[in-house]
Length: 153
Image (cartoon, rainbow, N blue to C red; front, side, top):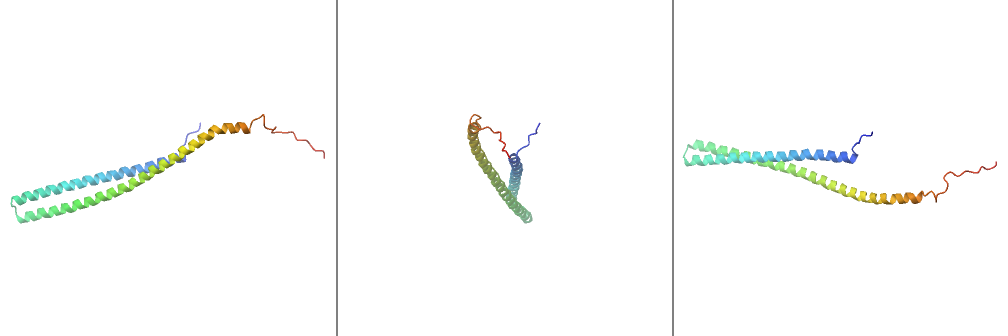
């Protein structure tokens, strides 16, 4: 019994799906992680600003206020870094998205081509038996093995 092996087309499609899907999942995961980091940095910065405002209203020492303000500056820099990371992750996701769209378009084109060819083949399958009957009709065909007359030498 023959084992069914996938055709080349099937293998290529499966390899494309396997190749595109992990890249997509990884890119989405990176965007989600970057968004979570930027949210955490924003929350930390907001808490720091709230603490600085509270310390200003309670009239703490100038050194303490300078330290708290310096820490807010550090958190602002972290927030900007996280924003750049998120932008890089988003750009990577855009690249993967373009790959996915290209794969979908090529698959649609291939499906249209296969549908067109299958329609042509189905028409040929309907006509083919008629052609075979007319070409090989035994009543109209000459004898395929005629007896040759031997010539006298």
